[in-house]
Amino acid sequence: GSEMCIRDSFNYALRSKSQELQISIFYTVLLLLISSTFMYLAESSIQPRLLGSIPRCLWWSITTVSAVGYGDSIPVTAVGKTIASITSLMGIAAIAIPTGILASGFSESIGAQDKYKKDLYENEFPKSTE
Image 1: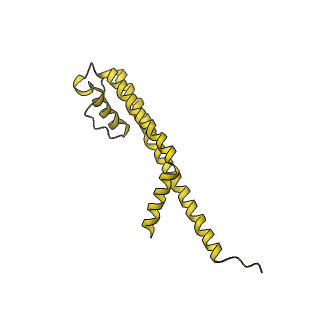
Image 2: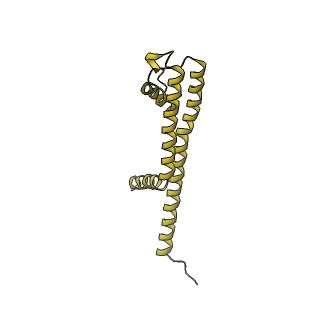
Image 3: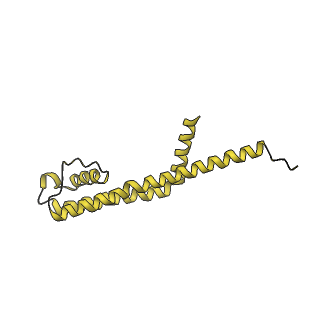
């Protein structure tokens, strides 16, 4: 049924785009680690309770990149706000890139299914040569 088709399309998209998705995941992890480190360097001495460790800054970075933005820890310095702005903008790419990759995989999957159906139909009902 259609449920099987959706699952097959999803699996096809993941398999066919696995290398691109791995690069995207690498980009996201790198973004999280670099932004956390820079935020730690910029804000740890000013806000030791909120951003005084790399894990706390990593939490901040995850919420910023994912656009959740709880607001439980925010930068107060100009440098920290600049890092936050850049991280937020790069977070848009971290979400948009894999979305585009998967959309492309779904599109290819639909094209492959259409070709399969067309070939099946043509084999079952060959055109007459008369």
